[in-house]
Image (cartoon, rainbow over all chains, first blue to last red; front, top):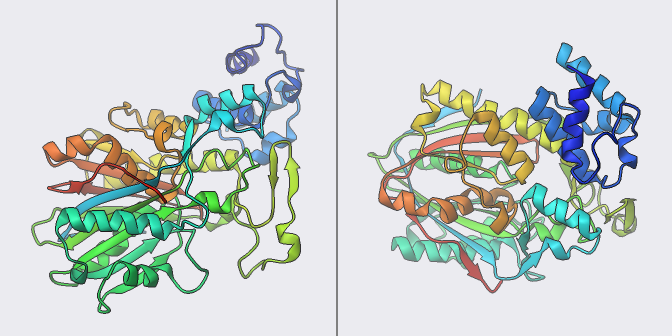
Length: 78
Length: 353
């Protein structure tokens, strides 16, 4: 599981943002176009790409894209 | 384990009723326009049906039941079993099924009861009614299911209000020794009870003056404690983890291939959930029809509405094997495999209710 691919999936869901804007350190809730709907969209994308289900509580603890990546990577590894 | 089969009970017919009044989610003023568009695109729900103030689920179900009795040429006095499945009954007490027995003109020799289930309710209700009919020679039954969710939602809650629509359904079943077996796989996980809940107004947390005070829980979510709360992410996770597994387990138990099922009729939750389930199961849209764009999430009525709206023509041509899958509040979920041999299915009716 690569961060670059993970970011590419997130970028695809934020379709109005220019490519390259999102990096590991990006606080995803601060991105333009963020809403609670986007949270569900990301959870669904992560489920479809990695077969990992992040709970609402886990998502609430994540701030950056790196935080999300680490959460998913830990589960994929199991 | 609640995997079981019931012989000798026929699904005679289905009728569904929705209120005439439609509301567009593109007009949902609680959230900015861009978010509204994202909401509609992601959930697939652009319009919802909203019942008039004071209309109860029992009114919509009564409408559907009367139409169904007429179409089947059944007389009310022939009915021995009435099950009313809803989360929005007329009263906390008494059971609405008793009121419906009277309003529909069913005989006093009819047993009638309410069941408190939501989105998983359709397969559950079918199993209950079929189990009862099995030991009642020649008996006929009505299974009524639906919700007026608009009555328990805050119109200022973007996380719940735009998802739900109002509807009632009526399904007729009868004992028939030539009927193909119905099969069920029903499951429960009460540890997730908070994922979809009305927190106050029952007897664990009775209504107080404070219950009725509106508060902004987060931007776009203003509600009081007697309104329905929906944790979208946890409901998503629950749905995609349980529904495909439950359906597959039933088919495996029956030694049936997915390809031997003509239609998979899933509860219509929202498009993100339904598309995830469909893709996990490797089904086409033709195999797993959707009605979210037309009728939204009508709780326990989504399955009969989808049958009536999308596959009525196929059913009238030849007997079809259907897998019905419901999942939601409880948490509760389940699937049924049924055959539609000669089943009467009325088009979805609109009523001034």
